[in-house]
Image (tube, rainbow, N blue to C red; front, side, top):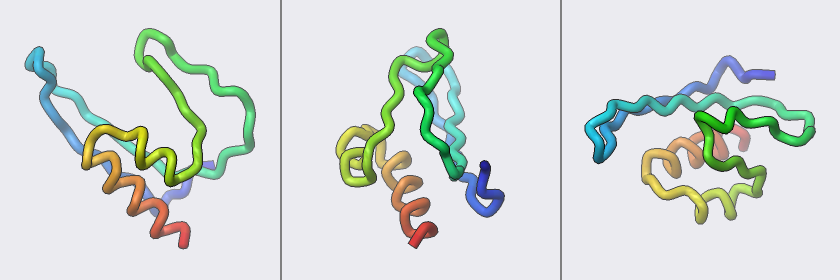
Length: 73
């Protein structure tokens, strides 16, 4: 179930000069194994907050995760 009070995004350009947009939503998730679209997603993780902060590579992603964690209280 999406939390309509949280949405965050940013844009960037890859080394190949492709423009990309990352969009994040906050949602309640009833666990079931993830089914990813392999042509679009190389990996998926379901990890605790502290581990996610270590796994994320870009400061923008870490900032968004921190905002979501703060919102959750």
